[in-house]
Length: 142
Image 1: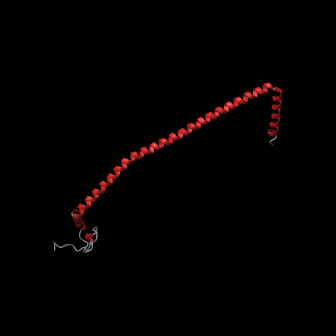
Image 2: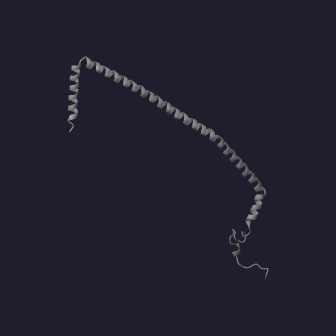
Image 3: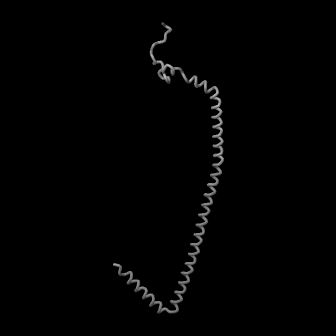
């Protein structure tokens, strides 16, 4: 009786998958033998081939990334240069218009001074009329 197994039912199979009569045996041993046989060798080769393909794809992407970054940087530089050129042109045009306006003002001021020197009485009467008109327009704003 010392050599008999204890009669504890399925309690010894707790933690094992499938503790039924046909499922009680350890399937991982059989599965391991199958993987190390024919199936294991071809799957390992496929995995190695797939990994090599992925490494090649990663290397291609890594090689393309600097070229793409260079193209992006050159496009950005071209855009900045274009904006700078447009701003420079706008600044030059504003400078030219400012110079033209200053010349027109100086021309108008010289013409006005010459008119006042040639006919001072008319100039004073025109100035008084302009002042009176502005005071009537702006003085009664209540």
